[in-house]
Image (cartoon, rainbow over all chains, first blue to last red; front, side):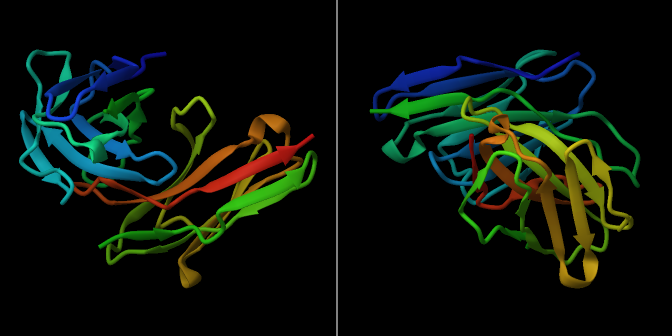
Length: 117
Length: 115
């Protein structure tokens, strides 16, 4: 069964460094998402991406964050200058195209645990 | 804005007992979707069930069942005859209809099943 994959599974970085989290969505999916979960807290929406542009972003997704689909398979989240409070699990998700009256389930990747020291 | 409230934080049950998780939601959308996800200790998010706002029929799927009531904006989830493998955090989530598919999650319920 196709699945969303994420690399690395765990990333440790120093405060102020740039990190890139990578995701490979399911191949025929067209909508992509990033969520984050600070340890022990709820999962929070960061950004959605469709047709090579951001379709929606939350207040968390400030200028330090950016997303890109550099090729036909990868979807990346970049944090330009990491802060301690960026330490969290980051989940990628993707959705297949659907009709106007339907909702398509978001398939989640296993997550990347980011630790900022 | 969409909001999901899961009031209970940690619930402990003895194996084979039933456990019900409460979820109350707020939305201005007329079409919306409700979900339950399971997050085991390994950390991944596992999709369990989805319900559309226009279908209030409650169902049972194996040991899982849910009670969707639009009148009270609730979407409760029950695990029947709990097992140790059910120990996890359970999240209720809400999404709008087409063009507004971001998921809003509740804070989660930590379920501990004691053997």
